[in-house]
Image (cartoon, rainbow, N blue to C red; front, side, top):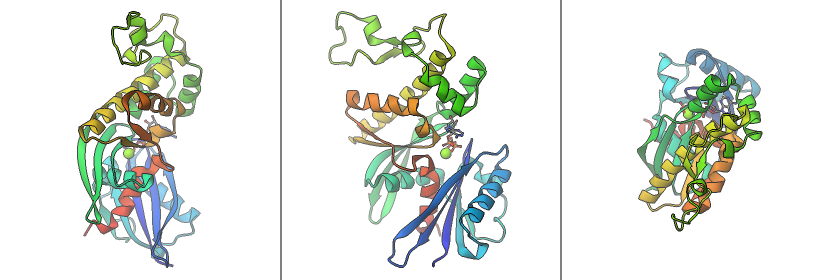
Length: 285
Ligand SMILES: Nc1ncnc2c1ncn2[C@@H]1O[C@H](COP(=O)(O)OP(=O)(O)OP(=O)(O)O)[C@@H](O)[C@H]1O
Ligand SMILES: [Mg+2]
C-alpha cells in the first residue's frame, strides 16, 4: 500500500486531521477524519496526530508528507517528529476541499468556523483557481461567545438543546410584522427585517439561543448569496463545524428558495478545510 498524505488544520477552536492514501487503481482513499479540541495549538496538533495514527494503525514510516493549514499552524516551529511537514494556505484549502466534497467544478465555498471566510473556487486546467472574497467575524465564535454572556452556556450541545426549544417570534422583527399592506411586493414576508428587533422582555433562554444562532446563520447566508450573485452562480458549498448545528442548517434551507441559490452541505462538511489541505499535495513544491 502507498504511503499516506496527512492534512492537519489548526483552527481557532478545533484541530482537524485527515489522511489520503493512493490505491492501486489510482483512486485516493480518504482515511477517516477526526477533530480534537485543546487549549493550545501545539498540544492539539500532537494530540490529533497521536490519536489519528493510533486509531488508523499508521506508523511514521507509513506517512509521506504532512500538510498543515489554519490560523494556528504557525505555532508549530519545526516538523512533527522527522516527517516532511509543509504549510499550505488556508483559503486554497477551503476552496479545494469544498469542490472535492461537493463534486462541483465551480462554487462559492464558505468556511463557517470560529469566523467565516468566503472563497470562489473553480477547476481549471487540471488545477483549482482560488479567489478569497472576504469574510465576516460573525461565525461560530459569535454563537458561543454571545451564548456565554447572555445565557451562561457555552457548551455547544447545550446551546443546540436550547435552540431546539426557542421561538424566533419572541426575538426578531419580520417583514410581515412591519407591513401588512404588502408594501414589499415580491419579498418573502417571513424574512427577518431586524435580528433581535422584537426581543421580548419575557424571551426564554431557548428563544435567545435560537435568536443568536439565527442571526449568525442569516448573516453568513446573505453574504454568500451576494457573493454567488456577483459570480452568477447558484451553488454555495457550506463547510466548517457550524454546519453540524441543526438550527443553523435549517436557516440556509429556508433561505435558498427566496434567493434562488442552492446551499450544499456535503458529507464531511466540517472537515472541508483539512481535506483541501491534504489534497494540496500536488500544488506545493
Ligand atoms: N463539537 C464542536 N466543538 C466545537 N465547536 C463546535 C462543535 N460543533 C459545532 N461547533 C461550532 O463550530 C465552531 C468552530 O468551527 P470549526 O471547528 O470549523 O472552526 P475552526 O476551524 O476551529 O475556526 P476557524 O476556521 O475560524 O479558524 C464553534 O465556534 C462552534 O460554534
Ligand atoms: Mg476552520
